[in-house]
Each structure stands twice: as C-alpha cells, then as structure tokens.
Amino acid sequence: MIGKYELALVLNGKLEDEAKKAELDKALAYIARFNGTVTDIDDWGKKRFAYDIQKMKEGFYYFIKFEAEDKNCPNELEAHIRLMESVVRYLVVKQEA
Image 1 (cartoon, rainbow, N blue to C red):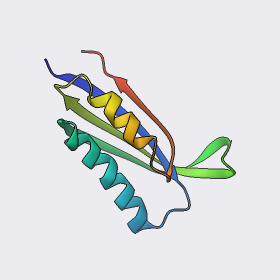
Image 2 (tube, rainbow, N blue to C red):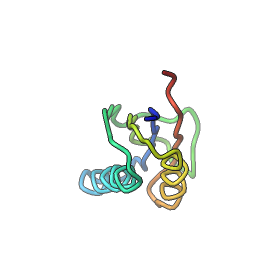
Image 3 (cartoon, rainbow, N blue to C red):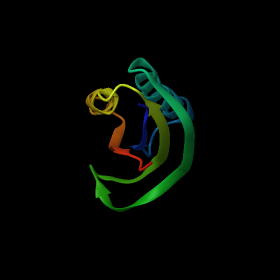
Image 4 (cartoon, rainbow, N blue to C red):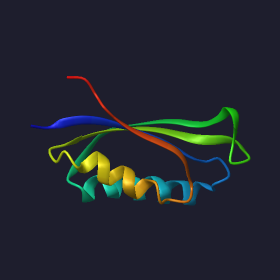
C-alpha cells in the first residue's frame, strides 16, 4: 500500500541560489533513494522566523509531497536530512487518506 507524506523543509536563509538548489536536490534525491516518488513541491520562498533559530532570522521554506510504498522511507529520509548542515528545521508527516 502506498503511503502519502509531506516533508516540510526550512533551509538557511543565507544560502545563495545555487547552494539552495543543490540542497533541495539532495533532499529530493534522498526521497528517490528510499523508493519514494515526489508528487508536488511547494516553494514558499524566503520567510522571516517568528524567533531567532541558531542566530538566524529567516529561511527558505519548502513543502514537498511524496509517496512511498516502503514504510521506512520517512524514517530514513529524516535520518539523512538531520545531517544536512544547511537544514534549519524539517518534519515529515503522513497525510490522511
């Protein structure tokens, strides 16, 4: 059975365009690596934080919807995204049917 998930990803607001794209591509590659299929990417652009996070005031917000048959995909994805230096915050949630 295919599970539908959403990854909320916040990248460092000081990244240049090329670095930002490289980090987003890396996250998308992790989804593909763990047998997931990206269905939609919602780019909210640069937004100001409600409070400082790691002495930063803003970040780039992405909401990535994906599907995966493997139930371990979200866990593996979080484990790898946690190690990415430019990621300020992330969260993978399962979408309701």
